[in-house]
Image (cartoon, rainbow, N blue to C red; front, side):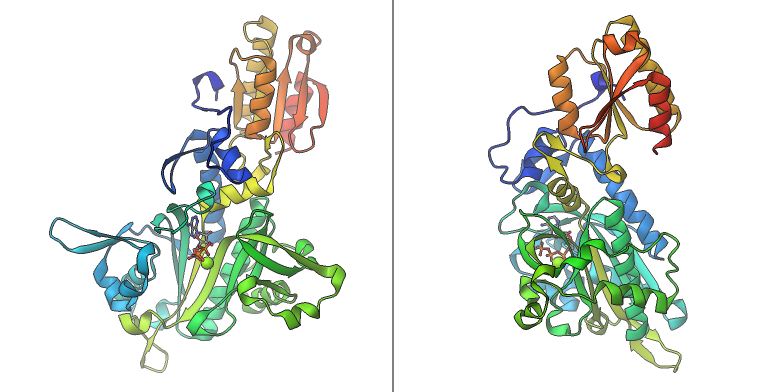
Length: 442
Ligand code: ATP
Ligand code: MG
């Protein structure tokens, strides 16, 4: 992609209302534009990151056995009246009326609708287990939308819903998602720690929030340091191996980890002083087993092996991709801008032509662009007439993992410079060596 033909509206100034660094950097890097309170457009650079995040989520959901669907954003109030949540949900729910004066709503979540899909088709335990997910826009009329896409009113959510004949099956479904989430966040370059979350009236211990440690996080969290180095389950993990997955979940819940709502002072005191990590955190995912809470009132029944009808056991599993993008920036930046982890970078490499119009620089850059793209790398080629300083500042701000810099002096000797964004390391290499280095590092 040539920058001269791209749409990258870089801002020189921080937006006034941007209180946290991720909001400032995402706005300045031309990733997002606010349209009204808590409602954002995703501009090209932001859209690319969001797509990468969604791709990772999809791949890991599919790997774990979940199946993708797409439910609508607008829902009929009737379903919510059936579950009893229509009145309970309160002002966060955006209620609307169609031209026939029928009450509708913009979905804040989809438990009711997915239960309706389930009950329309599934009759027998033989069709279970089943886990259906979608990645769809949600709306919650948050009291205080803030921090950019971190807490917005309109946001994207991946929400998955599992169906099992009994609690034992549902626990396995829960463990599948727990494991998938560990892999998902790791692939995005995030250290997400599962922390016990409130299960409300359902009870039990099957609810975890996946939390990123960051100073600007909205929740106060307490956890054992060991979690920072626990191993992430491999891509060959067998998601049908019940005992294997239980062992992963047992390990990842073996140390203390809780948000302030679930904090237990006595248990915390038992953790050795040097092992304690008390910090602030961002909730990027939430998984929850809620049994028959919706299937009972909504008659989501299945025939069991005993020949009788049972309400199906359900769980729901959310990740907020639009919040995740902000959380990644919050966790990975420096004073010059964003530092994208490889897995989610909008482009793999930036190519900077220091003197467009100079025949040797142009030829070197075109050679690099062609070779890197042929090897499957996504390259953003800065072929604009900006000053060198402005080009470097933009490159650092948008945070591509590697920058290839082609200046007239180096190019005259057949060389270019490579800069690693994360460390600032620079190295001068022959053009062909630079191509080899970058294509092999993939
Ligand atoms: P919070 O406690 O932060 O308000 P929640 O517990 O209400 O979130 P869930 O219903 O568990 O959120 O939603 C699942 C996921 O959706 C969250 O873990 C988060 O990643 C994302 N999410 C929820 N609300 C928002 C929001 N207002 N803006 C962006 N993402 C959100
Ligand atoms: Mg939550």
